[in-house]
Image (cartoon, rainbow, N blue to C red; front, top):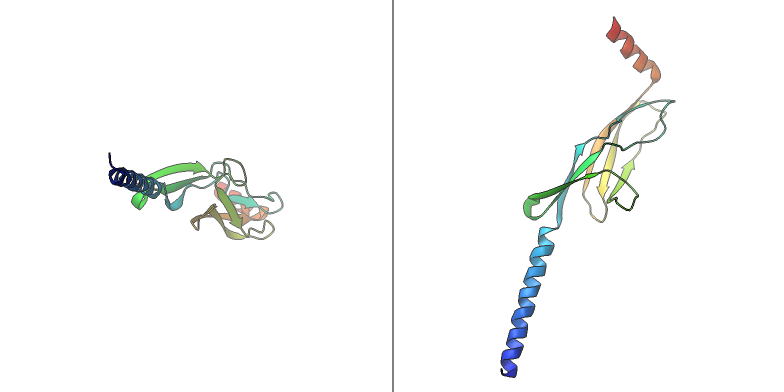
Length: 132
């Protein structure tokens, strides 16, 4: 085999490897995320609750071309298994509806879910109205 033929063969192999890498990387890129299931607790009571709990929360991460592939993950911030950061401005002393942002680390992709903070008096009023 001539040197020129060897160089041509090496170039063809390199081009094929580059194409394979491009296809594999292109198929695993994230195309979006969405909340699949809000956490079990989205109602917080003033004077009783003081921190956000994420148990039961699920996020779907869409990958591949046009989001054709997906994977559902638990919302677990700041752990080895986690790929999400959590951002919120919940004031557990003030009634209102607050948004919690789930951000896929190393990307700009985010999804949100609402939580509500209410007074104990309001909960008791609702219970009384339901029993009349």
